[in-house]
Length: 170
Image 1 (tube, rainbow, N blue to C red):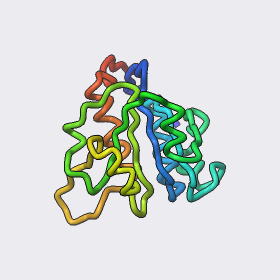
Image 2 (tube, rainbow, N blue to C red):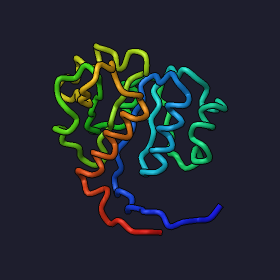
Image 3 (cartoon, rainbow, N blue to C red):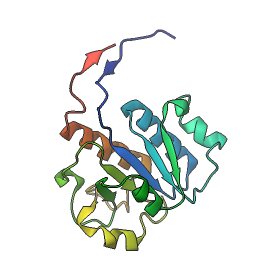
Image 4 (cartoon, rainbow, N blue to C red):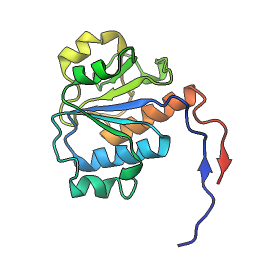
């Protein structure tokens, strides 16, 4: 297969953290892991997981990039918060009243997403109601695929923080 030049951007000195709370579907997490590898973003998985971390389908969805991802496991969401004191949280929910386009993302912030079936726990959304954002849609679809939602928000956060500047072809 011929190798062609690829458009690249410089890595962010302080990348965004992608946090998945109780993810259930291995291919989604694998796709998100690939996005994290492509952006240099650490991936934080909050247990319980709906799969084993070495699950074949998880690795297949992440293709051969899994080894490039900085993965962290946390027993609970509070364990994640305790491990990263002072980290600003942005919780993404299909039930949000404010658009992620209005969020003030700063390098090092945590982008927090819930499990595919029900999203983030209501108690968690209520506890951080000033940090809940959604992705507007115009159709009757209940919500976007988790992997798509992570990509949309992560790349917007990077764009807002000059994380997509210094473009070059490698």
